[in-house]
Structure formats: C-alpha cells, structure tokens
Length: 388
Image (cartoon, rainbow, N blue to C red; front, side, top):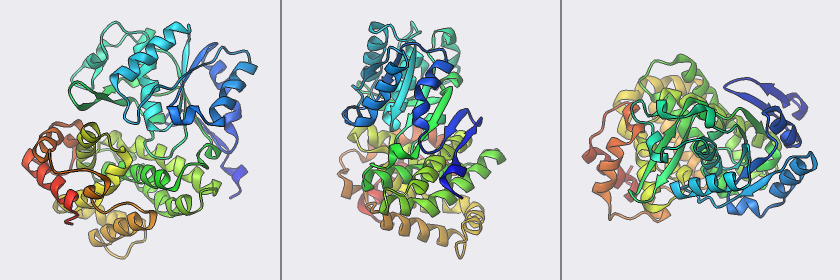
C-alpha cells in the first residue's frame, strides 16, 4: 500500500483521523468540538520543539485563542493536573489539546475532567462507583495527538496519575474521558530517539500481550490484541533502526491504539509491578514493562500455555510458549532493551513494599494467576537480578 492508502478516518473506538500530514487539521478538529480557546497540554521537552509552535500558530491563525501548559512530569502528578486546571481557568479556555506521549495525554485528559469538578482528584480514582461522582457537564472536550507509539492513552478512558504524598500511581477513570477526536500523524513521531521508540513500542506490545492473556471473556479485544502484536512484530524493529520510516511509524501508532483498545479486557502482572516501580523510582513506564515482560510470562506459564500456542501460530513462530518467549527476548535485544531492572537503576531496597503494592494494583485483578504479595516480591527480585 502507498502512504496515501493509509489516510483514513475511523470511528472506532472514537473519531480518529489517520495519516501523514493530518496534524494540519488540528484547528478544524478543535472547531468541530466547539472549542474557541483550547489549552494545549504537553511536556516541557516537546514544548521547546517546532511542532508545538506550529500547532499553536495553526490554531491562532484560525482564530482560536490557544494557550500552552507544559508543566507535566514524565510520571504526571496530581499537582501537575491541578496546575493545569488553574492554567485552564486563568486563560478562560474551553477545551484541551492533549499533545505528546503518555504523560501529556494522561495529564491533559485529567485536566479536562477536573476543570468542572468540585471534589478533589483522588475522589475519581477507579475504585467502586467513584465514576458516578463526576459532574459530566463540567468536563471539557479533548483532542488527543500522540507523538509516541506506546501508551495508547489517546483511546483510553482513564489517566494514570502519581499521588506524590502516598507514593502510588492511581487510575482516574470515567467513560467520558475518552478523547472525542484523535489525530494519528506519523510525521510527529519521526524525530523520536531510538531508545524511546523501543521503550514505547514495547509498552504497546505489553498492552496487547497482557490483554490477550487476561482470563476475562472479551473475544473482540482478544482479536485486536493479536493483530496489535503482529504489527509490533513487523514494524517495531524498522521504527527503531530506521526512524524516518513513515510507514513503520504509522503502523506503530496504530498498534499503540490497538493495545489500549484491547486492554479493556484487562492487564496483568507487568503493569501491577510497573505502576509501583514507576511511582517509587520515577522510571519510564514503557521501559519497565519491556524489562518485566519475559519474567511475567514465565511466572504465568502454567495458566497461559493455550493462549501462547494461538499467539505463536498467528505470529508464525515455530512452537508454543517457548517460541513466544524466545521471540520476546530476541525482540528486546534487537531494539536495545536491558535484560534486568538492575541495569536501569532499580535497586533492592523496597522488594517487600513493591510486592505489597503490586498485589493490590488494579492491574493484578486480571493477571492469569492471582499472585500474593510474596510472589510479586519474588518476581520483582528475579527481574531485578536478571534471573529468568
């Protein structure tokens, strides 16, 4: 297919404009949602790049009173969200452009939620029926523009936000947090460094892989997960080694959105461990999932053999579980992912604490095996030492 043939408008799971150059439609997308004064939310690194200046200029040339908020950490915090709410109100904004990687997308969506709420942010954590507390009428519309292919937050109904006081990541959820419009333009990801391309791409794989292994009944998500993994298999090495390969960049954006759509079926121990490790060590979420991946597969082996056989057939791998594990290890090596958590600066000072936090993490609920805190600690220690 030519790149022009990849230029499409999709309506699943939300309105999505896909293809090279679609960022040129940003101002029109904002207008479609009724915005006259959008607040562009991004991270400090992106804020300094020409693409953000170009996006703001496009909006302003179209008569939109666009503002910028960029005080967002790599693991966004509750304080980041509330600072964004203050900027939204101070600028009399009426919508959010969530522009960037997972941190900017998550923060932007949470800001759009909180601008119309009177309760504190943590009252909307994804626990019980907390979502019913949301004043839906007060929520601002969101256009999501991902610049990394990993989290898939552009098609998610939640934000992962760090509670600094409790040293824990909390999931803020409401169905209406799903952005109303998404722009997937691969040219925005071309300049992404190889290491970040690899880590975010493995994050996309972790979403599809954990969703595929979830014990919940959701055949639609299972099918999406399989194809998402195939796209990663085919295109992630190209995106890492040939950063200007626009087709590979586009396919990885699609794989990222597919992974986040699939994990409506649930996640598992990779994320149950990555969340506390990210909160405690401020480490990159995608990289944590990438390093943890084979250790979690081995730990879950007794419960996922049939799924691994199906996955191996779909990916044309010669065998079942062992073939999948070998492929994961080879892919990690090819794209430059470390083999152990120790290699990325994680230490053994909090082994028991991480185990306790992982056991109660929401992602643990759909792991194929219900691990205890002690089992999570042991799994963490194996990944820390590289003892596969």
